[in-house]
Amino acid sequence: MLSTCSSARKASLTGSTIPMVRDNIANAETINLIKIFRTDTLSLKQAITLALVYNQDIQIYKSEIAARQAGILQNSLLPNPELAIELENFAGSGLLSSFKNSETTIGIGQLIELGGKRGKRMEIAGQKSDLALRRYEMKRLEIITRVRKKYLQLLAAQKKTELDAKILEIERQFKLNIDKRVEAGRISAAESARARVELSIAELALNRNSRELSNLKRQISALWAPQSVDFKAVSGNLNFTASIPEIDNLLMVIDSIPLIIEQNTIIKRQRAESQLAEAMAIPDPHISVGYRYFNESDDRAFVTGISVPLPVFDRNQGGREEAKLLEKQSEQQLQSLKINLNIELSNRLAIIKNINSEIIMMENIIIPEAQKAYDIIYQNYLSGKFAMIDVLDAQRRLFDTRRRHL
Image (cartoon, rainbow, N blue to C red; front, side, top):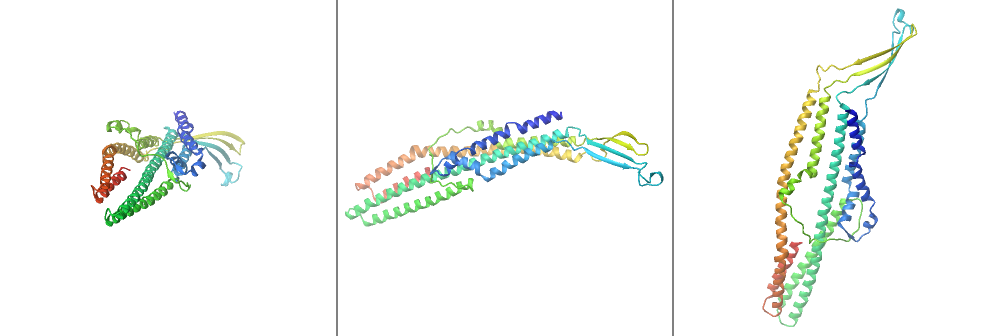
C-alpha cells in the first residue's frame, strides 16, 4: 500500500499539473515584451500578458507551489535509523573495576511505521500542493478579471474623451454660427452668451474626462508594477454582444467554478487528515539489531530487540475527533458556498439582463430618436421655427444619452 501511495504522489510531483502551470508562465514570458513596452496602443491581450508575468501577487503564489512540492518530498522520506553504542560493566567495584570484564554493544535501530502513516502524510502534502495550485489559478483568474475590468473602464473613458472632443468641436462650430447670426442682427446677443456657456461646459467635461483617463492608466499600470509601460491609448471597441445564459445552465457547471474546486480540494485534504489521525492510534514498533563483544572471554554475539508503545492513555482520541469535526466543517462550508454562489449568480444574471435590455433600447431607439430630434430642431432653428433654448435642450439630451451609453 505504501508503494502505491508513493508512486501516486511521485506522479503528482512529476505529472502534468504543475508543469502545465510552469509551461503557461514560460510561454507568457517568451512573448516579445520589449515590443509591448514600446507600444503606443496597448491591446487587452498585451495588458493581460504584462500582469501575468509581472504582478507581484502572482509571484507569491508561485513560490507557495514550489514550497508545497518540497513538502511532498519531505513527507515521502522514511524515518532515519538510529545508531547506538553501549559500553557496560566497567569502572565499578571488584571484578568490574576495570575494562577487563566490560561488554561493548554496537546496534542499529529502526522505527517501523504501521497503518500507512507515511503514505497518508504524503497524501496530505499532495493535497496541500494541489490547494496551492488551485489558489494560484484563482489568483491568476482574479488578476485577469481585474485587468479586463480596468481595461474596459479605460476604453470607455477613452471613448468618452473622444466623444467629448467631438462635442467640444460641435459646440465651437455652433458658437461661430451663433456669433455670425448675432453680427447679422438676426438674433439677440444673449444667444451668443448662452452658446458660450455651453462651450465652457463642454471644455470642462473634456478636461474632467481627460484627468479620469490619466487616472485609469495609472490604475491599470499598477497591476504589472514595478514594470513601466508607456502607452498612449488602448485598442478595442465596446460594441460587442454575447448571449446571456440561463441560470439553470450556470448551475449545471457550478462544480467547475474555481471556488468550488478549491473547497473540494480542502475536503480531500481534511479527509486525508482524518485518515492519518486514525492511523496515529496504531503504535509503531522500534526494532533494533546489534553486535556485542565480551572483553573477558573475547567472545562475540548478536543481540536484537523490539519495543512497542502501549496505548494505555493516549490513543489519539482528541486528534481523531478534531479531524472528523474539521472534515465535517469543510463539507458544510462547501454546501454554504454553493448556496451563496447560487444566490450571487441569480443576482448578477438579473443585473446583466437589465443592463443588456437598456443597451439594446438605447442603441435601437433612444440614441437614433435623440439624434433625429436634434437634427429636426436644429434645422427648424435655422429657419426661425425654434428658439435656441430648444436646440440646446435637444443637444444636451443627445450628448447625455451618448455618454450614458458608453
